[in-house]
Length: 411
Length: 192
Ligand code: HEM
Ligand code: FES
Image 1 (tube, rainbow over the protein chains, first blue to last red):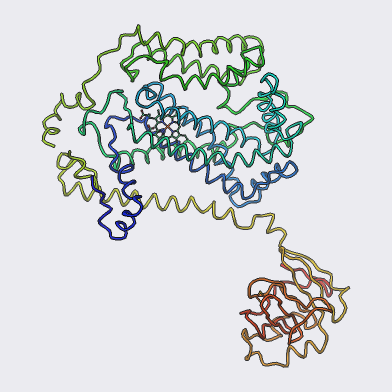
Image 2: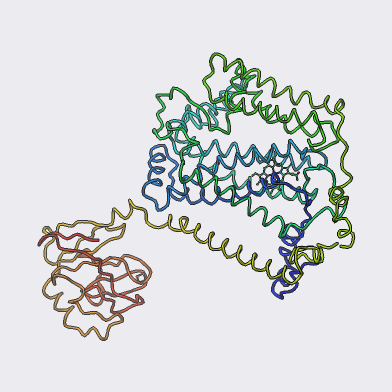
């Protein structure tokens, strides 16, 4: 695996001093990738792609945005009406956030289905969750910036979550606000943090990929790579497959951008923020709905907040909660059913989160919340009682048993 | 270890579809086609980003200013703002006009006849930004230095402009620019 970099003198000169070419050769070209990856393994590169678009559009939006309560709303309208292609940049950024969450949710559920969080990928999983946390914070902060009614009341409600903390809660909220209500100091710092966090995320993604390239990708069978016959080089096989995935994502993404740009948004956010009037029905962005449903399922303020955070924190423990040695749900007959039930449960929570907290919705929300945690509580036991189906000997074993065996041996 | 030997082209060698030679040209074609489309697409996608930094519609809308000339006495100068820059309007005296027209433009760094720089001889309209590195030349106030040629003098690096706003001495390469303007009436102009 010598670096072909050495073909060119200048390349070699640089590479001897700073081995960027060797690094790229190892991690984007030679990187031995299991040959049986399916399309669910595309979503990591899709997330990276969307993140780059978010950072780019964000930087250009920031060039025309004013983080001041007196000007923020108007500056966004100016971006929409006056700035060349401002509407495009803003709609790419708005819908990009939704695409980002969509892609990352699928990425996470891929991990849940195929047991990607298990030994030796625990830290990879953790970094992923840290990225997810930063994403949520960034999305929340960004939603405040246009300073519409939903921005203002979203910011008020979410920052007030911290007031549930006993004793110091209110002081923390005042500190977050830099005042006694959500106001200009709040908007100003939210803008600074919204600009900062994506770069923190970018660094985390590097660590994520570092961990990935140390332990290597898992695969749909969930068994270890036994040797070179089980892998193919990343380039051109997965570069082209990832590009193809980007093409498909762009079709969906740009459909929303050009034909339904406000599909994911709330009309109320086109009304300038008014600290004196709360809109009758405030809902968070769709990607927060399941967590919002858990928050509202509990009649106690503090406990609701704790449960909401716990719903994400429990994912950090997953590598130890799941006691089964078998990674892929393909070979876990019971876990496979539970996976789909859990997915449906999350969708139900999302649906409930969008509904007003009254009547039957409250009851369904509570049952779905209990089921959410029951799922994780049951996993340790499941590992003991479930009888997994027999695992294949190796990734290429099913192929070798067929006609290709002799050719593979020759090669 | 088929793949480590052929990573550059990725094919697992002779076991791939078709013969090695045919395989190679088809792959090359696909590679070049994909790269070309990718590069062209990225280049096109970059344009909205670049163009968003150009003046926006509201900025362009500010780009004309109307000025009432009636209050400006002969020999007096006023400065108005146009596109965030100063515009010098001087109501020239007969001597100033004569001084501007009696010289041979051929000897100047940026030869131009005074007749080509004004619409009405008594009204000189100039963008008041030194063509060297962008300072605002002195000469608008009666107490200002006006330089060796009675027009304007840029204090930053010593450029002398004459009573037609032409560069006569100093590092500036070109005459003070004349913005596009129209006389709306005998006593009003619209700049831009
Ligand atoms: C900005 C967000 C993210 C980016 C850019 C990103 C990027 C990637 C990439 C490029 C891969 C390799 C390709 C693939 O397996 O799909 C990967 C793998 C992985 N990611 Fe992420 N990721 C992100 C967020 C997350 C989150 C939120 C989690 C989970 C909490 C996560 C968990 C994992 C795991 C466990 C793998 C290894 C999967 C396997 O090989 O079986 N990632 N990530
Ligand atoms: S900027 Fe006027 S002389 Fe240099």
